[in-house]
Image (cartoon, rainbow, N blue to C red):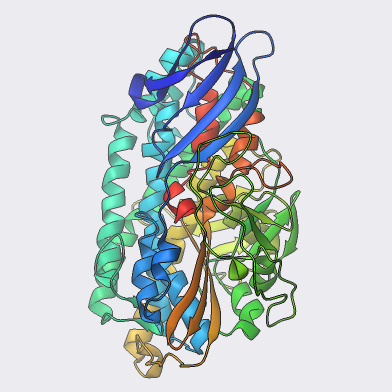
Length: 574
């Protein structure tokens, strides 16, 4: 088998170089258009079977924020842990504040919760277009499709776009042209809309990324009707935009399925998902571990652990208790010593649970058969689990809790989203749980997640305006608190645009004794575990058929599978 290296190809995707037989080693090192340092090596047969064989996903950089937090004042955790990611700093800041609130018995006022919800929603509005049009989108653009699948481009030129009345592209080929990196209309519009979302975010957060106003007990900035009117002007721009984005990805997905049914197997994976929920109910969240099942289910987005498409639990305590981190294929030493055998609710905890973990880096040579990644292998009850906005959609749809039914209805098999009138008339969008799970459905779900985040932002602004006009204790942004001198522990259960985020803190004498972070790509971008089970991205790559004609053997279908996860290796290696 010959060895391939990678170089930038048309429109910035990695181009493999090789000569000889049809069997190739695809080495995407680094994988471009992902957050952080990721390398993927895979074997592929471009001949008779046109299949991918073995694959490994390698996080190639160590960050060490868990170690940096140790020995610091407890209040520093919010600002240090935010730096674990340059995209989802709000998610890590809020999750850190939640962990400290649980540890110290702090309950923020409703207005403080509304402000944090809005920050989280606008962070999603910043990142979802980035994935759909700046990172994953160019893989479906005219230059890439022309180069790797000329027959698909010819067909696209003759295929009317079903959603033309919404997104205003007459043919599928027009959508592909608009996805072109740097100069395509959809690409440039995504840059602009991400800026609009950031402008709304910093009104309350102070700056983006890494907000300066999130704190245990609420937020530290004054929030009044003027602020909410400023952010409302920007949030409402996404009412029409998200509808167009959904129509674009519905049309792209349908086109590829109709062109060749084998595209449904690109990046295919099991229906195993994990999410801790998002956007707290302002009147029910109290930060207490004992009440976590209640305030978790009252979130706009319901927590959920899903195995083989079946919802196992919506209790964030049970979801957290089932998490383990394996390091047999990671550059860390195993940890030992005193550990907690159960949480305060009696759920059993493994020695490998994050609250029992210690971060012990062990650098070494990369060996695909041994240690090869700076990410641990996070699992839930032994299962490799996929995280992301798509997991959030699945859990919320299956749970049918719908505590906030003003705009979103969960049916048990779908999410129905009532989009208010803006320049376009009011309409209903419905994301349905798909029969098969693959790269195209990940991207499609992310488009619908943009609509979900838009409605969460919009509804929280409406609630915030009402609280501000009513005044009283509920309109306060912050409740004072004290860090206890005695040893305490806490966990934050939250999520970012890319999904699952948990923080685990142990304090002694008001100082951080141990701090652990589990990010979304600690699951999705993980290496193999001790039983040899590949991580979700690795498994999806190995399941991918080489459908595109790909005459230069770039491995475009492999790249589509990888980028559909929107991995953030900064979060994974924190």
